[in-house]
Image 1 (spheres, rainbow, N blue to C red):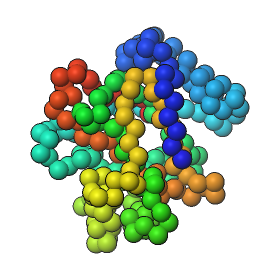
Image 2: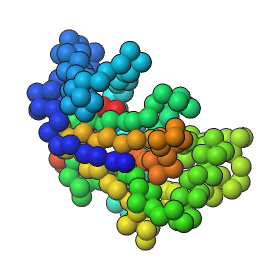
Image 3: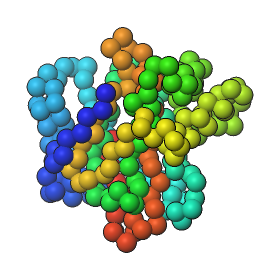
Image 4: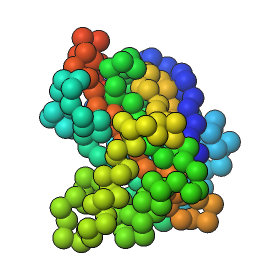
Length: 215
C-alpha cells in the first residue's frame, strides 16, 4: 500500500528540517512526529512505537549524468526492513524540495501494481527468500547465488522497460508525505515494496533542487 499526502507540513517546517543538527531542526522533527502520531495514527502512540529519522539525498556521484545514461536507479532497489527487524512495518518519506517530473528524482516502486502471476514478482520473492534485500548492496557478495543476479537485474529493468504500468512513481514536492508499508498483515516482507530513487537528470540543477528528503 502506498499513500501520498500533499502539504503535510508547512514550507517553514521544510526549511527548518533542511537545517541539520540545530535547535530549529530538532523542533521541526518533534512537530513532524506529533503530526504523524496525531493525524495518521489518531494519537495511538504506544510505548513501543517510534520514528527513526534519516535525512537523505542522492549519494551517487554520477547521479546527474546525461540523459543518455541507461542507469535509471543508480543506487539500486531495496526493501525497508532495518536489516530484518520485525518492528519496522511502515516508511514515511517527507520531501523537502520540489523536483520537476522531467528532471527525474522520483521514488520508484517498480512492482507496486504487479499481478500475482507476474514473473518479476516471483523474482522479488526469490530474492527475499534468499535474504537479499538490496539489489546493489548484494551485488558481488559471496552470499549471492547466480539466479539472484538475474533476479536483481530483472527488477531494475522494470523501471525503464515495457512493463511501466506496474510502476508507481512519487515525485518530490516540498511538504509531500509518502507512506508505504513494507510488511503484510502477517508480518512477511511485502515483495511489492521494493523501491529506489530515480536518477536526477542534469536539468534538475537548473531548478536549484537537491532532492533532500526525511525518511
